[in-house]
Length: 276
Image 1 (cartoon, helix red, strand yellow):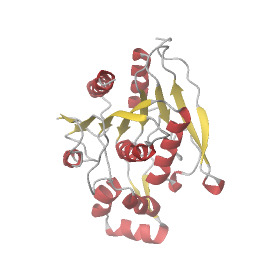
Image 2 (cartoon, one colour; image 1 turned 90 degrees about the horizontal axis):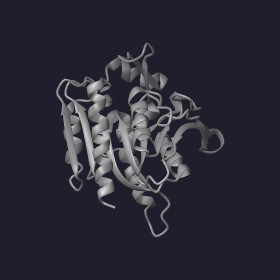
Image 3 (cartoon, one colour; image 1 turned 60 degrees about the vertical axis):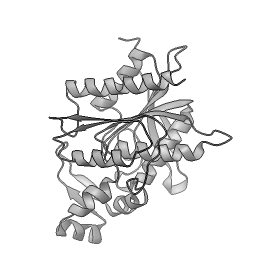
Image 4 (tube, helix red, strand yellow; image 1 turned 90 degrees about the vertical axis):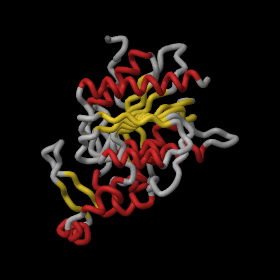
């Protein structure tokens, strides 16, 4: 097991300039010699980090398969610098893209959980823009999205805002919401919500150019399973598999859930390798 899971040390990369500069933490597992499978990239959810259960399990899978794996903490999360309240989808996409381009793998598979699914879909768009005569970014070979929450600010938060929350947004620039997963409340800022509108992906066809496997719990209290079905409708050009977990919640961190996630990732890797 020690060969599969070396003691990775965090590296830090400065993203942004001037007052917008922040130190982003990342853990990069190198591939075993001769392994040319795509690099796995873990993208966490809102207020989650690269040391969570699913992130560690993905890294463990990479160790078993000998493939490379990149994990990072968005600004305001985990080991990274920056204030959480300054966080927006645009900032977190910029950070993830900068880390990927810094590590510079040739091919990647994006694995995104909850908000990380939205980040992954935006990264697909950004990587497509980099794909030109002078390739500046890796080729996207596949995606595994776990309870993906694209456009959650405009689709899941804004329509359900209570009067006191709207008042707090207007007067304080944020509102707090009790969290099921932490003693600390969730904080949603006006900047996050306004920036979310600029990063919408469910307002047209999404072209990832790669296979996509979506795993969604049907008892998810945070992201309704209908949201995953809607996402599939916006991926008409891609090879999409949607797996519903009948008793699954939002976190999908039970042993059985983890087994399904890792199996999905292996399937995406096999498809990518078969297409070489």
